[in-house]
Amino acid sequence: MSGNDTTNRFLRTPEAARFLGLSSRTLEKHRTYGTGPIYRKLGGRIVYAPDDLRAWADRGLRHSTSDPGSSTVFPATLVSPVHWGQPATCGGAANSGVCRLVSYAGSPRA
Image (cartoon, rainbow, N blue to C red):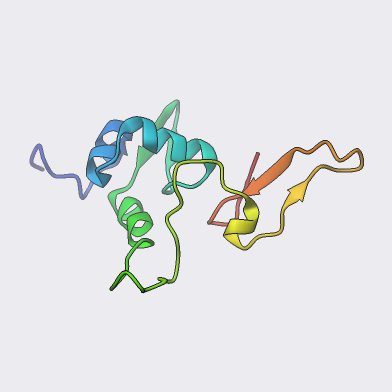
């Protein structure tokens, strides 16, 4: 495997960010908000598979500026579950105003 071969190994956050053309901080924000690519946690390390990064980036594929596309790559900001087409689960009996986000993959995020 050459020093530049990223196809057969996991990438740490800085490498994954370079792969996507983002800053490490932006990728960290995506991870925090649940809007980013799928990642793995191995011990205390966060790693990304190149195929997962490509799949996430491909959600933004468009053929023209008028093409709505089949999916959306959200910005690295807090996104309402309504934007994901999911019902919002906010509050509770006391309506605390705390919302539980649902990621694009369908797994709950606090």
